[in-house]
Image (cartoon, rainbow, N blue to C red):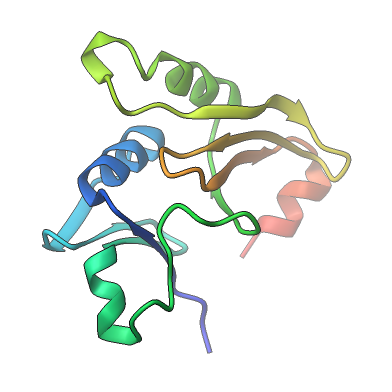
Length: 140
């Protein structure tokens, strides 16, 4: 078995795709107006419309209702991501705002981390290993 993706259900696919494209630098691959994927070397973030929920089981997922999962992205420079995300929301980027939950900080396990909420309120952690031990844990 191999972990492949996480899917976020949303009422506004384009808005969420725009946020994640800006935050990660990855470009989405759109299958339909209701489904897009941002692919990285390690996994895929799928973003799907609430209209797709009925294809699985009506009512099984609710958009913008997550309070327990943190989606994580390994980045080169946490502080640069923080600067980029706090610039979102200017007149050119209206509507694509990240709420900073915890600004850049180095965690006891050796990662520098930035915790934000995406436009639907989902927690997103951008992190980079800053100790040799943390880097070794991520080596594949």
